[in-house]
Image: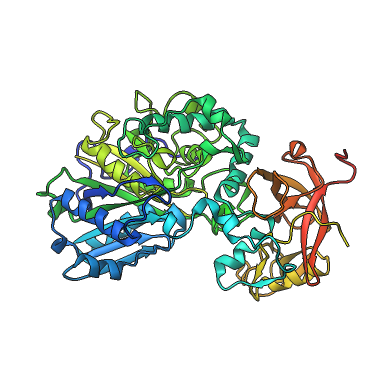
Length: 426
Length: 145
């Protein structure tokens, strides 16, 4: 079912020293603002923070803001590209684009859209950005309580849903299924039932990423080591999710600069090639287990990425065995485990033992993952920081470096419609 | 008619014209699934087209209100003021429904006793004159403590 690394021989084109003959888009710059706990950035607006990150990413590329002609983002971004273009003084905005994938599912898809824009000549330099200041708007983890009515309300009645999303949520909200930690607990609990996956195995994911964060001065939880005992003792949020199975809630912004292969050649840093990208969802998936109780039985206890992963490997001519380092979207530990299976790093149901083997550690693991600490321990910037780290890991700039890494898988979201990119360096 | 399990401050259901008939049936204490009158495929939540044959024609099939726990979570954070914790959110496979699952709560159960495969039965909670919400409790012959 899962593609194996031997598949690459059957696919034409790529690899063995050189990646492609067709000119592909490259990532040439990355940058970020400071990352903090949610609510701690109040002195600048969320869009001003986006501007900071974009400026740093453009400078990292050795480009000027006068070179930028496109902006791309995802997931109902509050920071509208047309206003940012004006604030940044872009000479002309040729491409402004946002991905439909919900929440963090669209991060890599935004990179993909930027790549399509530069590969087809719609724009030459596109910056993908994400800025989140939860304290200035609302706290994601509080979704349930924010939505709940006051303590002494009128007797509840049916309300008009003014969007397709809300009509769909109408079959989850009245049961108190509002918090992401509860929604993603559902497929994880079923995975535990089917395959014997344990909370300790999930805990190993959190502990490993925390160790990576400890080496990363940008990481919000850098100074807070975690043991498996700490994980097990952390408060239960939505069984089987302990607090330390849940990602952080953060303030911060980051940005990624995408341009053509030709333009990438003589810029400041070693360019990173976008080898392949995919986005999407399986049939009938909707928003995933958050609102959809009727995902196919065969897909319920997965991240929903298996089919997409197959397309990604097929398109790139690579397979799981070619990946040197991975940055896997980690809203919740169980979703990391299910993605590892979806992308074929181990067989379905074997994610638990795979993690127990120490595979995810930067220190000699077979699949060093989230070398920045991830959303669990660096910061929750809807996973665009995973793309930033993917680029750094291939440039040799990661604080948990993987020697001679040539191929990095970056994923966005899981258990929702999602996306992924394969990055490579020559 | 039934006793109350959850406080009024739980989020109210949101409906549009596609989903409204489902809630109207619920108000009459009828648990229904949407059935394609072209190919017979059943679905929830209600949707404008059959995802299998794309027919826009459908009717409502009443189901008996017996189900099995497909997966669940014990939520330890309150959604509503005055809520007892933890509360159980479960995905339930509805019997005689053509394979449809529904999200709901389990009530009258010790959270410790919830497990995948547990047989459950429907219990209506009347929230107001025109709103009833289906919740489920362990099936009568099973766990009773």
